[in-house]
Image (cartoon, rainbow, N blue to C red):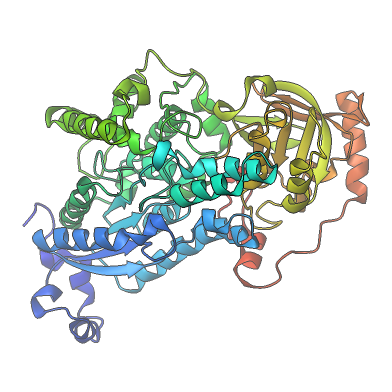
Length: 589
């Protein structure tokens, strides 16, 4: 038995005398009499046939349950399958994406509280499943280990799914034939796991480890690696230890933990969607994280990871270079090394232990095998740069403000052409993505335009991604370096180009983005963090004149009729907070 509580002190044992039907019902489920006396471990996953990121999680669940049994516990499997943003792109299905994060968290809260458990293992891989689990485990606050589902392999020629939008736009414009387009579609997803680039799925797996909630070195492994199953077994064993020790997520996750995670986010050029998810997770711990927190910590932060979409290599190579521990080793001088982690040791102690136990030598062995498999000659420093030789020194995210976005808007400047860092552009507003992408693909927009997609925020339509439109722009050699795309919606973690999202307040809430008219002049200045309406019909105006003009427009503005009048999206649209606060559901209204 581990140091700490005795079996009789565990919550699962305390409730048995109170719930007389619990024992017989568990016996009917296949538990033995001996199982009833053991630490009872909640094993939650997003397993399902929904997409490659969740289709293999049943194997990890089985491995975790084996580890739980070996450590003297009994695992109970629970499932809340997530949806796939990629499969939903281009349809109204993508409107359900962000709302699904809240529903996953709600379901975890229900499952884990309806029948108390002593500890948990939480497994997910992808965009909303991973943050949904992180929010859910914070609410439940039982001792817990997070196990991530890893990343898929790259296809031939190191093809990854983030490149498919480029192929689609090229096909639509007649630049490639159907055969080439079909080749890309047939080879972009060769295995299970999250998409092989630093999109939202990969970013949030990395954030889970950066927060101290996974076993060290376990985030974003190749999903086909035998190391992944080994980590899952060890996660199960650790969950039993934590049940006895009583170390809860709230004992681990602090403001210092979030600052570490945001500095890692800057180093990896993480998804802009992280600005929705980390604030929502922090909210569950009573910690306030906003866009300003990201902006503050990204200033002067070293950007180190040369992985797509901002970099060169597939995410498969991240682990081969040493993964999250290697990033944190490079960031040692700026991290809070004394934060507690799920191992019961501090971050600094974990990093020291990994250096001693041959972790990096094992990763190098995997890198050598990958180079032989793909015919490449990639070194560790090609993937993760040393701290003193960064790709950039101003992080990867900037929060812009001005009379267009009083609460803020987000740009991933590491994926934006330098030509677009400072510009005055001509406004071209569209009230839906469908109308906008048609204009982009058929060259109805011109260099120097600021293209708006509005009424796509949480209250407008659920805050879907504008991925296809952003790809149509960034893959156009002329438009990708001469126009900006501005929205109160959001972007895929795979998006590149001059794209600005989360513009707040959103249009449906009466934000200034709703008041933009054709021909307005829009100032964008990334370094000065400005996003503002500075003129009308091509003529510059003073700030005072613009304030009066916008006030007059607001008098005549009316919100659009609610897009959803029933179901989950009605609930989400009515209760979601501002994107700059995390778009979590607020019940204080």
